[in-house]
Image (cartoon, rainbow, N blue to C red; front, side):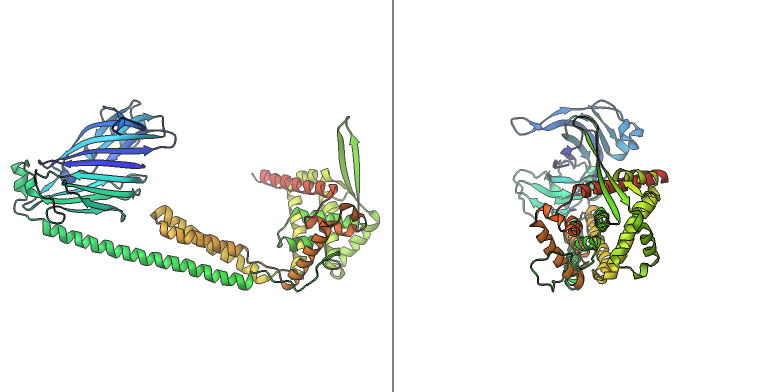
Length: 555
């Protein structure tokens, strides 16, 4: 509700005539609006009329051109379900609840509903003063009321002197940023930038009882011996003290929240500087044209390059290595299916002469190098797990195998990645402290941000939100970047960077003489061969197929 304008006129007879013009901004149109009215001093409500207009349809005087609605009988069923209301534009009054139901067809996203009503006996009449104590915005609106303005016109006689806090007193309750102004023409203006859903805005105005010249004798006699001004001033002073105390408590709380957010950021920043900031390499070379370390497996180099994040690229690089090592043959076949349709088929063949050696190596795993263990694990994954003992495996066969045995495929690939992770941990390429601290710090950051979001959502506390949400996000970001390479890892990573630069400066045809570096060129993102790209697509498709197969079988 982006705009609320209320004109309220206090009559000399103690009545209150109200014209409320409220703009509704809907998403996709609407069909009803419900005004639950506050009736001061249990007066009698009389609704004079309801109008609906388009906020963009303005007359020459700047007023919204509105259409009056017909009044219809109220149905008790509407209290529980407003959607059962009449299908024509109209309004109804629930007299026992002082509630007005407005039904309309709003094709546009915004409309202005004007409600005109009168409350008889809305003013308290005492010996010294008359009092209007009225909630002009109730707490039962489900969305915020924005740009709220209330003007209360008092029944000041001609020539009456208007002296703020002498002849006219006014207070406002509700949002802390609301304002109250007593005007020289005998009116009082209340403004509230926003009255949030669940909040209220109340006006309290006290003025000389002589201005209520048309009040009946019966009403005047009810409190003819009671003076109210002193008690009202004391009560409002107490309200003011309470509000001041609340503001001080709120300010203290916000200061603590801001300080805690800054302290949390400082602590996490120090933790990151001590355990997360990347070490400087001790290796001072400018160029490197060999493997980062003699015998270093390219999949290990890939994990080092990607901060130990798993990827199908590790598998592809491992296959490229065992092909280069002679454990497996790679063959490219072409089949012509038409004039311009050439189908390429890739085949991996396990060398029979090396199979017994591989099995023997598996029995002597403790004496094999890390690269040899990974090579044997790659051969076993391809031909023992995926091909199920067959010595030849096509790239398409990898996908078909994942489709046929999805659970076994997922388990086998994860086991291979676990074996690679074990070799990386054995090398101590990353600091263990960073990995241990990562999740706790991320959890603290996310929780801090969520608490700020909850304060915003449930309490409309933007100050807390602006302090906690960015701080929590930064803490989580620091935590996510806590893992760092060990000194050995930093030195080897520097060689990877130098090797990557060296490979990037060399044409691809030089790989014929340095075939052992092609897996490194692939995992470091320099270049890839046609076979590597096809194999990566096959592994990615196979993984998706297997995961989907596992999900379907579970369901």
